[in-house]
Each structure stands twice: as structure tokens, then as C-alpha cells.
Length: 352
Image (cartoon, rainbow, N blue to C red; front, side, top):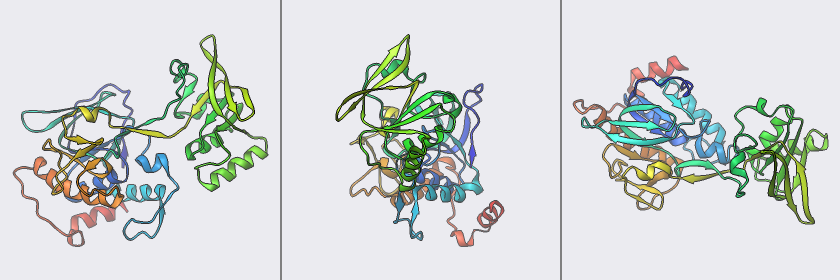
């Protein structure tokens, strides 16, 4: 799949596509494959900085056992396999793009705009956004806001930004441990702070972190962040709350990786029928209350809804077949089993 160009470049004309897929998690990636199979062009947008959605952000190395024909795989492996499956259709993926507004034109097509200036011209929209946009869980400290992006961070865009600095990484999941281990190679000193001795990260990452601590390559401290101490507009230290009292910890940067929280965001303003933070759909085609906008995966709401990846695959398949009618209203789609689709076989063979 193609990662799109830098969104900071000058704006281009609207990107025309049959289907705009909102969400680059497993269901969104499978939808891109299915779109290609039935002859639809698609573009993918995601608010996150990498492909994989909730699976990669929250549990990349967690085993999954209920994907048909795959006995067991991690979330990371599933995403890698889905990307390989999508490869023949080379659908562009636009990361760090939040879809803000949708507007239906007189011709029935949709004009979709992102917060970073991309504009899409789509015949249909497929929401595969999980529980909505995932945003970082932020520090509940008043002094954190003014320091954001300068001294307080919720992601690591570039390791080089932390060169020769005292860096504190807060959190106990895979992201916190992985970034702490990576930063120890460029920062002056890295300290991992977590509220307890146990972690929700992969055992291999915990073992690697403990080895690095034993070797003096980084530090690990148990405690909670009680305050950020600021001098001359910059972060100088943290106050940690521990069982036996408080402790000051020198810091130039704090990277808080407490996980992500779901936020339906601008989707809530699109005029869709929503219950419990999810979009109501017709289960014959997973279309929302606004014809031309579909919802699949965890964001879809209907009776007896099961939040399973395999359910999302099924939903996407049916939704796209209805979307075909919006993209090509004067053309009847003829169903062909993939085993007998010679064009599909040639395309997949060439990509392989």
C-alpha cells in the first residue's frame, strides 16, 4: 500500500475515489482489499501515525485466535498479513489525518475534508474507525498543557528530538517500554516511570528493559507523577508520589504513554443516527441513516452486534457491494467467485 505524501506540502485538487475508508485498522485494511476485488478504487485515512489502529496501538503482541484459517497470530502479524493482501491494489493511506467535515453535493457524491487540508471527492464513505478516533490519554495536570510539544509529549515523532536530554517515559504498556528502550540510545539519560512493578507489555520487552536497567543503560522508578516543575517556561523536574513520600526527578522532557482513549470526534456531527457512541446501521448492507455513508467494525451498532474482527470483515464485504451502486449507478456488478476471476489472479500474481 502507498503511504501518501507529506500533508504539509501545498494543497492539491480534491482526490477523487470511489470509496473513502476512514480507519486503517484490520477492518479498514480488509475493506481496501475487498474494494479492489469488486473493482472499486479507494483511499484510506487514519488519525494515527501508523497503520493498524487499535490492534497496534493497544496490544500489538497480543495473540489472536479467531481469524479464520489462522490458528494463532499476534495483532502485529495480522496487520502485516492484511497489508500484504492489500498490496495488489496499492490503495494510498493518509496517516495523521482526522476527517472533520462531510458534505453531500447535488450529484450525490461527497466532499470530505481533513483537519490538515486534504480534500476527497468520494462516491461513498466507509467508517471503519473502531470506537472512533483514538487520542492520547493526557496528564491531568494544569501545567502540562502549556508544555505540550515542547517538553511534554504523547508520542515520539523523531528520536533525534531527544538527543542528549534527560527524558522520562511514563507508562507500563508496550509503547512505553519500546520507546524507553529506543531512547536510551540517543538521550543523555532515560528513566521509565510506572505506578507499579508489573507491566502490561510483552514479556520480551519487560525482560529487555530489566536487562538495560541492570546494565546501567536506563533507570526504572515506581511512582506516580504528582507535579511538573517549571522554570522560565521550561520543564526542569517532576515530582513523583511514592509509597514512602515524594521524590524529585530531573527531566528535560516527559513522554507520557498511558494509552489511547476513544473519541467519536467530528463523526458525531455528521448527522448520523448514533447510540452509545456507535453508528446505527442497516444489517442488510451496513449503511447508516445517511445513504452513502457506511459503518463497519466496532463503530457499527445493530442488535446482537459482536465486536469481533471477523464480524467487521463480513460487514465491510456487504457494505462495499452496496457502495458499488453509488460509484457506478448505471453499471450492474456481476458476481464472480475469486477462484474464477482471472484478472484478480493476474493482479495478485504480479504483486506477489
